Each structure stands twice: as structure tokens, then as C-alpha cells.
Length: 116
Image 1 (cartoon, rainbow, N blue to C red):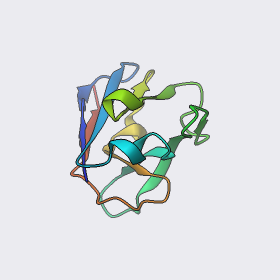
Image 2 (cartoon, rainbow, N blue to C red):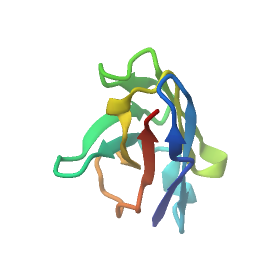
Image 3 (cartoon, rainbow, N blue to C red):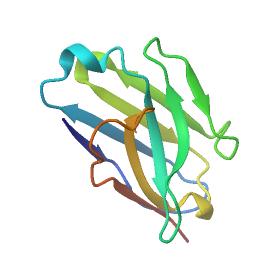
């Protein structure tokens, strides 16, 4: 299994980005039932949970992104998305996706930098 996150970049405060995370490998039959999540990490800090989406599509968010971020998934594409709006400098981090059990190998993540 490989998790490839993309869509990061440099954006000004208040801007938006849409991250994608595509899962590849022989996992088609197991991706759909997986509860998935986005995480983020800054240098010197532990990885933190940003948002989760259950297999049925129900989302949950960390308080610090509620109302600004939206998680979604496309099981046919084995892809999880994170729409990030009204970005703040403190959202700058490397963003990763994985199952909520963190039982797949971590990918390289995608860098999000929010700066004017």
C-alpha cells in the first residue's frame, strides 16, 4: 500500500487549498471500509489528527479546523480529500493521510505553507 498526498503549496492567509491523498496497491477491496483521516506535523512536534471520515462518509474535525476544513472521499478512486479554506499561518505543516488506525505505511505527505 502506498499513500500519496498532493495539493500542498504556498498560500496567503485567508486562502484555500485542496489536498488529495490517493491510495495505491492491492487495496481496492479494503479501502472502502477503512475509516480514513488527515494528519499534520510541524518540525519538532508530534503528528496531530486534523479530520476523520468514516467508511460511510461521516466526518469529524479537530476543533482548530472546524468550520474551515472539509474532508471527503471517493472510494472508486481510493482517494481522500481535504478542502482547506480561510487558512491561517498556524495551519502550516506537512499533511498526511492514513487510516484512523494508522496501519498503513506513511507516505511523504504534502507541505502546506501559509504566509504573506
